Length: 163
Image (cartoon, rainbow, N blue to C red; front, top):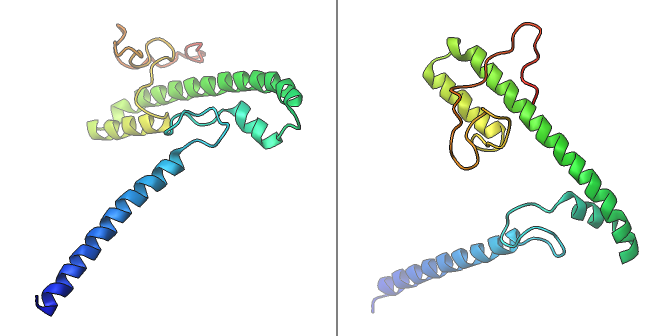
């Protein structure tokens, strides 16, 4: 075999070994990175983040199981209230964005409305999420209710729908 053929073959083999090592190493690193920390309530392979209760317990580092179990009901109660607050804020934000879209509709082109709709989906964490007040997007089962379009704008003196 000639020297240039040997050098070329060695270069190709080195490149292939580096590529395989990179793919396997990257996959192993990603799998390790996505694994939830020990003692968390997150499912393996990613998914939901560790909850408020478990994060706070890890932060506090209770001195024993008695203290941990005494703290858990308090943290669970606050976690429930926090979830209600966040969901209320999300519902209010969706309502405001829907009202804004209705007011802007006569001024915008179809392309501009599409960009605004994309922004709305991104700002609210995904597609029209459903599960909110009636008449605000698709239901979780994919069906639409019988209303057409966004809710009407509030009349003078009205604050909108009581969500």
